Image 1: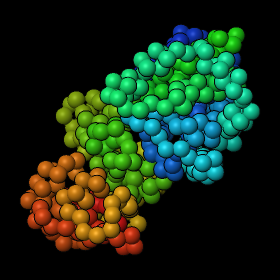
Image 2: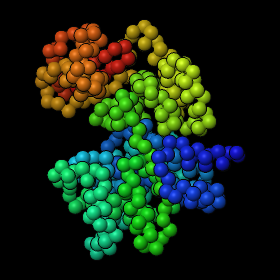
Image 3: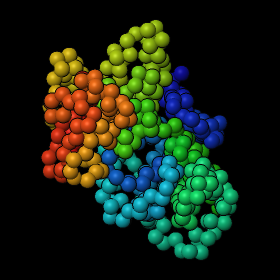
Image 4: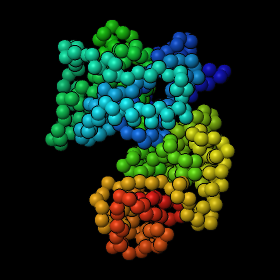
Length: 401
């Protein structure tokens, strides 16, 4: 296949859970028609991780093919809050907070996308001028039953957990975005599936051609759970090269190929040999080292990836403590004062459970400020001004306050 066909094949088949309508989208891509490819994001924070970057890599492929990526910053929708992957209402943000966060998002996504070529839109542009009557016209295309059939709403309804009417508006708002930017395609995670379909429903109701949609599985964190800031199991785009390399080396062995497929820009035929090497019994650590080098190169550059690998191997081989700048810093959501070390280890994401923490302590694998701790009743003193160093095993470090 030629270069264009190879890109299209990769775009449609690499780590995509569902495409509606795949046949339609493939025909459009092969036709040479310039498509308007929509992707929206609510900038609810400033931390961007490689899970957020999964659709960005797809958008980059669309850019390579000459399509127009329409990047919607949900400064209006962020104030409502999408609960697609949540089991409770989300706190509302101010308009100014979303605008400030958006600047950080775009600066980090510039490592992947040609930001200059993006059509950047803020959905407050049309949401702020939409009157109540218009909202009613949009809402009549959806039933309460349809909303309650949505998985997370259904679970909350059965559990008696409050669902605000405002939350019902979110998918309608996201669907309305598709009308306003005349989207041909929209990308989103599996948790966004209902919202993506809302765009198709509203476009059809208002006489527009229905957008095709591409949905992706949510990425698993380094420990196998959902990648989340809560679990501190994410690889941040803003991590320095050494910190990023060490973090990638923490991923579980059974996630190696998944990370190749989700998080790198390699084509499927370039990833297949890594799977063959694993199947042949090669040490997963060797392949993980190559994965870490590829990802550091993607977000920094090759020379730094080489230096980061040397750094990692030196620290691991010689049992050194990394430079402070290369250790992830975090502030625990905990009151000042004494807190059990077992609890701190769990909150810091260095272990999953209290049992695992106690096992690490009894195994002489835990250090606090470079001193080995074995007592499961040992407590540390938390304050807002001073970090202390935690270490579990040879390669897990956190600076915590």
